[in-house]
Length: 86
Image (tube, helix red, strand yellow):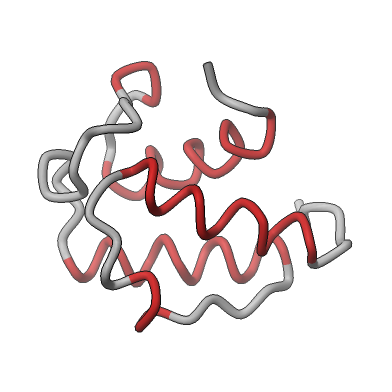
């Protein structure tokens, strides 16, 4: 089960890699999801724009699974204190 914030982030990821978020699994590797470096940068940029945060791509580059990625990104977006931008 996904939290509301995770679900929002999955929407962003799904739109960038054209995968239905219903098919996502926390243990899926980013490679298994088809997340190449260009899509990764696009996702980070979209999250930055939506939540008004600046994600460090270097720290995110070490994540291997979707669950690891979300474990880093969710707290950062929640700490920003900003509601998502439309």
